[in-house]
Image (cartoon, rainbow, N blue to C red; front, side, top):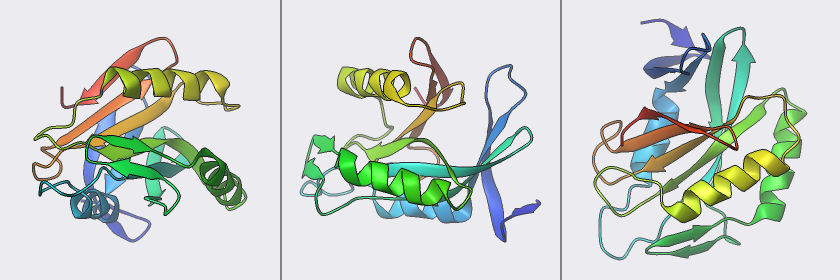
Length: 164
């Protein structure tokens, strides 16, 4: 299997009929694994996804979260939007594009809630970007990648790439 940025590619997902592919490396998948809610006292965790876009490939190369200023409960994650914007601005200067959000759910396979879907709609519509949409990754407590939900949100439509 080819290497991306010195890491093994462990998960590639086509973005519908666009011809683009999103690529998750072992480091990103390991990060998801570390934050799974595998016991009953862990609060939800989350953050942002950043990528290098090279032709038709979207390489997820950086991940953030959770922050001390986020609101975290067993069944709720509310990010610190001001710090998220700081993360976006600093990474963009380094050639990384914000491409979406991730957070955990205390269920086997992540499933977005109506609040998650509304939040992504607002994020896409209110953001200044040149992308067709943003990714949402919900990390369930089953092993990665089995417990993952990955979807693409255009602001109007949702395309499920992995999971339910």
